[in-house]
Length: 327
Ligand SMILES: [Fe+2]
Image (cartoon, rainbow, N blue to C red; front, side, top):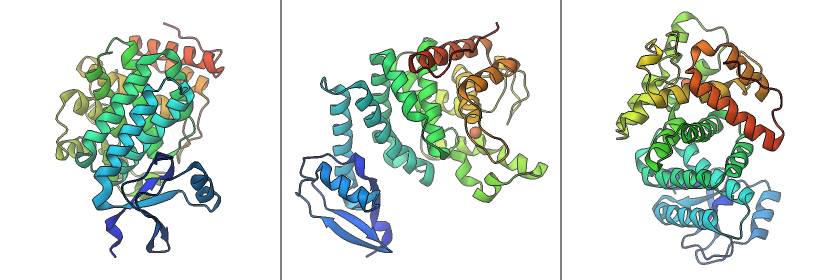
C-alpha cells in the first residue's frame, strides 16, 4: 500500500452517531490499519478511547475524500444553524473545521483542490460572525490557544473579517475575500526553508529572502487560480506600512488597498502576541498600546476601530481593561 493514498483527518471532524460511507484507518508506524469498516457508527466513546490511547488523527483513503468533505461541510452547517447548540459549541465547531482546511493548504500550498470547501467554511464563519457580537468573543477566545503558522493564519483571518465588518465591508463577498486573504497571507513561507525562518541574527541577504514571502504568497495564489484583486492586493501588502517603511514595495498609505490596511493591522497584532525566535510575546493590552505608540505605521481610522473592537470583546471576556486610543 502506498503512503500517499491516505489522508489524515482530525477525529473531532467525524459525525457521531452516523454511519460513515467510508472506512477509517489508524497509522501504526509506517502502516495504515483498518480501524472501522464503512457503515459502522462512530460514537463519542470511540473518540474518548482513541484519545486515551494517544491517537489524534484517523486516516481515510484519497478516493473517499470527496465523500468526507461533503459530510463534513454538511455537519458544520447543521451545527452552525442549529437552535439547540450554544454559541460556544458553534464556535468550537467552526474553528475545528476551518483548521482542517487551513492546515491542508498551509502545508501543501494547494488551495485549488479545496477551494470550494474553503469557500463554504469561510462563508459559514461569516454567517456565524454576523449572528451576534457574542459570536466574535467566542471565536476570538478559541483563537487564543492556537500556536504556529496555521493558528496565526486562522487568527488573522478571524480578526480581519471582524474588523472589515465593523468598517462597513459587511457584504458576504467582501468578508469572504478578506477572510481568505487573512488565512493565506503567509502561505509563501512554504517556499522558504524552515531553518531560515527559525534563524536568529539573520544576514541582510537572508532577511531580504524572508521579506519576499508576500511575493511568494501572491505567486501561489495565482498558481491556484485565486484571481480576486482584493485578495491578492491584501496578501502582497500585509507587511507594508502607512509611512512607507514596510515591504516588499515600501508603499505609502494612499497606495495601499483597504483590505491591505486591515491585514497590516491584524497581522501585527497577532504577531505581537506570539513568541517569535527574536522576541517574547506581549499581552493583548500591551500589543495594542505598542501599535498605538507606532501609529504612523497604520491607517489611524482603522486602527482606532480595531482597538475599540478588541476593547469591547476584551471587556466581555475581561481580557482588556486599560487600553486607551489617543487620537
Ligand atoms: Fe507575513
